[in-house]
Image (cartoon, rainbow, N blue to C red):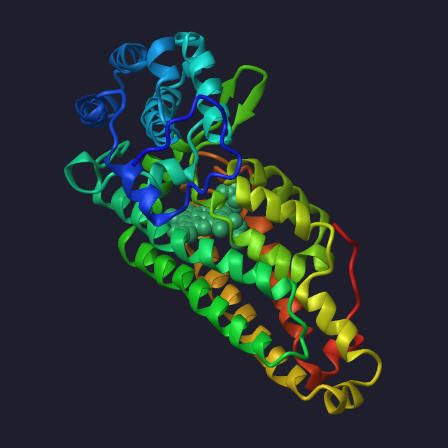
Length: 378
Ligand code: HEM
């Protein structure tokens, strides 16, 4: 049952699977047909038809006032599809349809999210089957949407596990069990990227899809398009190692990505940015004499090994992801120098290096864990 509310609902969990299913079913703007026609309008770069449709879809103040939170998310999803489409063909969408601005702001306020669609609107809250919203209708686009859909529930659960890990002593035997469960959730990213590598051509991404993810002006803000870089893997990093073993470039990327996430995740960011990471705590726990630390707390070894397995999963995802990103952003193919998340392939390289360095700290045998140094705090 959709939640009726005229005020924002700060603690609303928009990632709850039942709510996700509800949102997918909803069509508050009566936009099913228009969203389907949009594919053809994009193919023919028919900006006039796209803007006319966007104008027609805008709800009036009364309708907007009656929307549930779920309907507000679904409305943002559908308006967002038109925003990205208009921008893909050149114009700033809100220059052509300025009356959309208050609507976007109100939808953002009601859902406690940015006043634009995000990757979660475009993938997770998108209906399946004949009602699926797509810029192009190409099956490669569908694979990309599916990859994010696959990962979303796992990262949502994974982030809650990371929160529990944050409160669990590394010397507690439960620590390794929780970490292994987190690894299993994180493995969904590897499955997802394998599916994308097998089914999405770098050329399709670079030349056809990437232009739909351009940033747009929304009043006094510039907001990024609904790209996979908004998938909050970086928040798992923050809890596990990045709170105290990061670098300024990655810290900035995280800071700029966090507004596009759900309220709960923004809260976790606020908490984790101020707390030592799990790897930081591991280094502390081993101290100067790892042998003695292990004798005192034998469970430390299992905790360390479980953390190493988790970091390995992150490195594997990032290695495969970097492979396709490098191809799609090859100088001969790309249309844009940086990713739709506002960062470069060089940053992806830096993130892998940092993840590997964090993994090194979980190798007490190599002397890394006891002597690992804390880098600049975020
Ligand atoms: C054709 C496929 C893809 C390409 C070319 C690509 C490219 C990129 C690029 C260039 C970045 C740097 C940030 C930015 O976008 O500005 C990035 C970041 C990111 N992408 Fe992708 N990506 C692809 C698919 C995926 C998929 C399928 C996922 C997950 C389901 C994903 C998850 C991420 C994440 C989480 C980041 C943030 C950095 C990190 O955590 O390592 N990407 N991607």
